[in-house]
Image (spheres, rainbow, N blue to C red):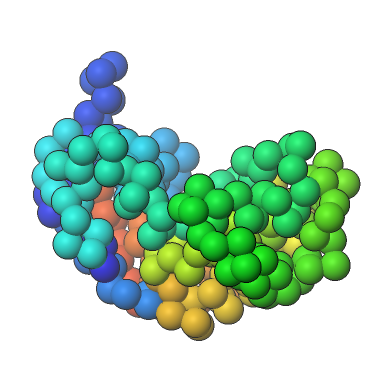
Length: 228
C-alpha cells in the first residue's frame, strides 16, 4: 500500500526533516504516527499525499512513485487518498451536504450517485440530519465529522489524518476516533499523526514513532511513549 525507501527530506533552509526512513504500511492497517514536536511527523505525513516531495529516496503508493509523479497527475492520485486536517478546511459558504458533495463533483460523478453517496456517508458520521446547515452553525466536532465525510465519500483506499483531534475536547475526540475505527474496519488504511497519548494507549494500533527525522520505534499495538 505505502512504501518508503531510504527517504530524505531537506528544506531550502538546511533543515533535514526526514533522515533516511524505510517503512511499509499494508492495505487495511491503522497506523499512529507519534513523536515530539519538530520531529518530522508532518513532513512524513505530507509526503504521502504529495504536499511535499522527498529530496532523495522513493515513496510508492499502490506502486506509484510519488517523487516522479508529474504535477498534473497529483489530483488523480489524491482522488484515492482522503486527507483530514486539524483545522477542518471546510468551504464556509457551502452547506454540510455541499461540502461533502464537492469531493464527488470535482471527479464528475453522476448526480444520482452523488446524492446516494453523500447521504450514506453523512449517516456514517452521524450528521445526515444536519445536511443543510452551514459549517458556522456546527460545533468543532461536527465540523471535523464533515471533514471526515468529505475525505471518505469517494471510498478512498487510504485516509491520512494530521492531528484530527488536536482542536477538539476529549469527549468529541473519542467520537471522532470511533469513526476512524469504523472506516478502518471497512477496509480503509488509516495513517494518523497525533499527540493524543490517551487515545493511542487505549485504542491500540500500530505505532510509528519519529524522532529527529528517523523512525525510533515501530510496534504493532504500541504505546504513545512520550509525556503528553
